[in-house]
Image (tube, rainbow, N blue to C red):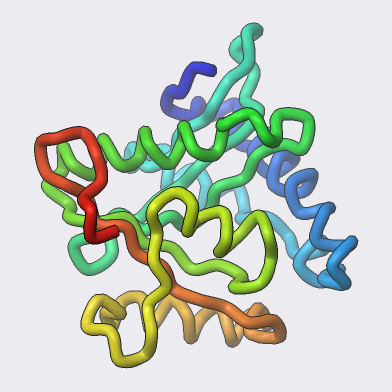
Length: 181
C-alpha cells in the first residue's frame, strides 16, 4: 500500500470513500452518522493545498483511503481518516496514521490527537491499539483547541453518542511512539 499526497482531481473520490466508510455506522443505530455529508470539496482542497491530505492507493494508483490533518496546540490533529470498506482490515488506516506521525515529527509536533466515538469498535478501541490514550476533562493534554473541536462536534450533533478526545505522544527522532502513549 503506497501513501502519497492527494491530487486535486481525487477530491470527489475522497467524499465517496467517506460515504462508504460511514455505512457500517447504520448497524450500530447511528444512521445520522452514516448520513452525514462529507466535507465540501473546497474544504478538502484547503487541506490538500496546505499539504495535509494524504491518500492510500491500490496497485492502480487509485485512492482507497484518506487522512486529513490540522495542527492543533502543537500536535497533528487527525480531522478525518476514512478507509473504503473494500480495503478495510488490511492496515491501511494504521499506515496513514503512521505516515502522519512521521510528517508530524518532521514538523516538530509532539503528538497526534483526534476525537472519536468512545464505544464504536473501529473508533476509540482501535485507536487505543495504535497507542492513543483517552483524555479526561482534568488531563492537561486536553488543550483548549481540542475542547473547541469537541464543542463544534457537539453543535454538529455528534454528542448524541459518547465521544472522546485521544492523544498519542511522538518520540522525536526515533521514528517510534514513546512508552507514555
